[in-house]
Length: 152
Image (cartoon, rainbow, N blue to C red; front, side, top):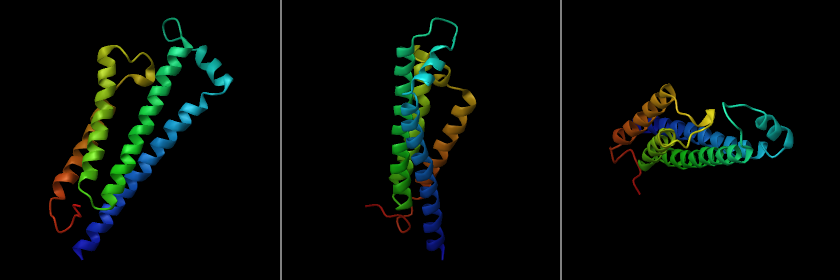
């Protein structure tokens, strides 16, 4: 009975991760394509962020942010599928994706690349996601029992 419950829990964790990752992929792609219409570009061009506003620079930063969100979502989908299939490395994919995402925003802030409000990290958000990475790492360590996990 424990094996069936374990498989169900792993499938639920993997499924939730796949859904969240898929949502991020869709949001990243839609975010990039929603700016293709002129009214949206004009709206953002009229924003004042404490200095001269360069639309092409803003768009370059926005498209990179959208691509990062979509790529991170794709990695979460891969990790979620692996977790649902009871592969231990799926937890590592999820944890490393979260850590890379959060560290990249702090690195962008430290190097001066982050210029726009959506690029700046916040300690509450980073703390939450790093706790999620710790949970994923714990999932990896907790599934060391070879009888419950497919390791191939």
